[in-house]
Length: 169
Image (cartoon, rainbow, N blue to C red):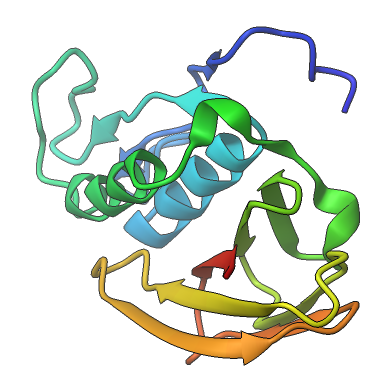
């Protein structure tokens, strides 16, 4: 909330790199890198990717040997499919371990970093909603229609991190 007035994107450069586990600050695996990128994007920021796999940092447009770039492509696809410039962080609408971006009443993006389940406290009573789950590892999407109450319980389809786009119909 305190950074809401900063124009998007807010860049987070040195949060770590994917790569060799014996290098201090550079031993993050693809899961950790993906979760960091999603969390930063959900806060309205922009993270840069660095790859330390071969012992040399690649972050200037070169792709190293890491697995995260293919997974981060799904993050970009997700954000390009929603009206991201109109959305603001609303983490108060979800529980611990989850992040929420919203254009309230119109569209919600919820990211479950580790929670597995959360409740979206959106005021959508009586409306039907389409919930589209996105696997951030593969980009695969699955949708269902639900009738909203004051709260929508979101349960990830399987373990790991997941994202959900909630569209009131």
